[in-house]
Image 1 (cartoon, one colour):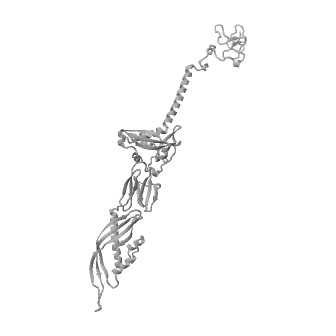
Image 2 (cartoon, rainbow, N blue to C red):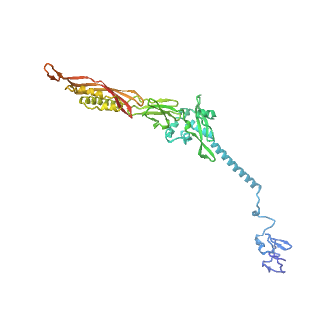
Length: 448
């Protein structure tokens, strides 16, 4: 017999191996863990029976049938497991492909155009306005392009209530050139024509749109498209107004880049570019009644400031009456006239010679002349002669002038000189002309 562990010979009846000390199995404890070889019992774990370091290390309770493998030792997959893995892989790929297809469809520019059209047809101002691209719009222009203004560009509410149907059509190159000002379609721009029609109507509505690819916004790896807000403009509205007139559209001052030129009559001309709808134009100028008009596509508007306010008329009448009194007083007193000086300073005629003649009439130098002058019952009218930067207003006064006329009488026979006086009263017509300049009226002419 040999030791089942180290393979050393065992003595008859030995209970332990003298070399390694392992108990010797008896016939009542058969050793089924190994197999007999020409070198003794070979352990199940493949260890060398002559090598103590490589001998079997399992206890009897751990030894099992060497012909059977444990689940841990089975490393292969069953057919069901392989099929499940393949199905899972196919589902994953299908999900990824489906997601990409869905995202690409969401990022399709034509779909964006259809969503925009749908918002127009249902009157959803918020959704349609939210799809506009304002990246190329200045802050000053953005004040004009508000949601309230945009709502006026959409189909009428009664048409929306009646029901609208619409369609999106790709715009041809020739149409792009004619409608969009020569822009070309590229990877960043798409052009479509949106049409709609009310049920039972033959007159369709239409708008041309340019979609712009958003640089910083994407559906995953696909771009987001929006409608260019500036591409919704119509042909310029031609607007003219006298210089110095303050203009507003929907309460906002005109933009500087709308100014076109100033013609020879002192009229400023503008080319206004806004959305295809109507706007309220208001013009103001000190002393004039406000002017208002409606701006609409393909319409030329001329601002005419041709009505003075009642306060302005009263002011010009009072100034004219004061100029009249002041000039006559200066003539009677032999002093300078403020009215004459103003006319000269404002580029009018020189009235200094006329003033001298009046002074001689009032004070002849021989003791005669006009004294105790009084002006009463002044009335007048104000007429606006023309308009432009050189608008003129003419004031016509009528009144009574009472005075005492003193004459010098010399008797040649007696050599006596007397100064008889006579109370006189006569009508006093007078006219004054003013030129509007630097937001005010300047006196340039007078006569009486």
